[in-house]
View 1 (cartoon, one colour):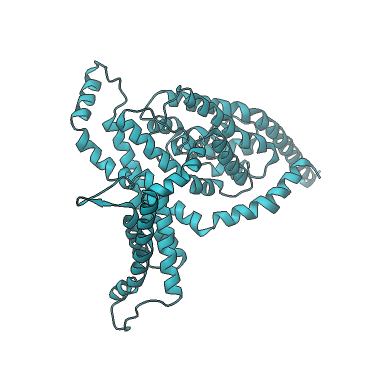
View 2 (tube, rainbow, N blue to C red):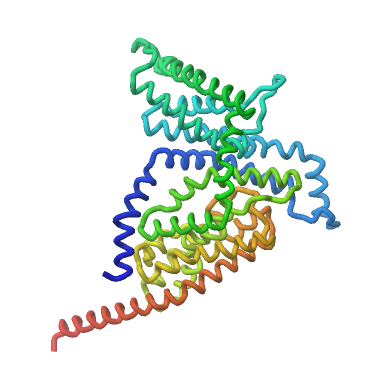
Length: 441
């Protein structure tokens, strides 16, 4: 058995079943869907940072830049409000979104499930002092608590309903009223379990539940921002995609809580004028590692446009425009790349090489770090600049990554092209032979 056949056998027999189960695991899919639901609010909130902290030298004398800087400084409190009520309270959106998605798996009312989760999170993460509610854990610091509360409250609700532990009203009662009474026992169960637990942890450790959870997870959060974490997540994503499995959904579903926690810390550091602490965020993943989609295939799509093989040239025409917006299914399944041994090594290695280049450049402060959340469909150079508060050097890095990707794909493309040209030539010869046989003498 050849090395490639052995590799395919391992993927099909071992990796694919595991990935399939992970991809349909209800907690992972619910977390992913919850973040997707909260994404529009967070993108708009992140965009406000551009207006609050414009990308100009504080000492500039250019009229437009000076006026913008002075305006943002004078009205910073007012300009910060949309940011604080979107990114600053993202855990509220995430808590509702995750629980609503998980509730769908149990055929629970999604609105009721989301509100129950929100109450659970506020119960442990919103301490009241002097009549004021603390918002400290409404941003990145409270993400893991929000996820735990969403899962716990939904599981309690589902368990009680499954065991018929509920208040039943006559059928004549309107469904909305009956649903309100149905949720009474789950609300009491949540309060009687989470609130005493929070008080106990605070009495024993001096920390409320969100702070205690962050203390336990801090080593894991720190490890998620390392180069090995980048390379491992990229490798898993690429390997799953090569097998035809949507690896991005699995990897981003796992990484999103870490990315959002680190993004909130970067934004807090930007607001305080401190050095930004984190490198590996969603903007780094989208705009340096997946330019044109998984495998950074936009340069490959451009190369295909000039291919001598009709099939590849056609796929290039179909794939280059979607590739600009990081949609590359025409390339993945049309070339194809999926399960094509010729493209296995460049498809796996291109984003990993670009990860090393971008991570090293950022570590040496040659690249600014990500402070904004951008739509994944934003074209690479534009998204890279936007994510780093419209700096110029990310555009250069993104173009460099595209050049590297093109150079790595080129020899494998030429080898594949020769194979297709030979097939096309043989097919044409067969057609000509059949045509000559059919022509009467």
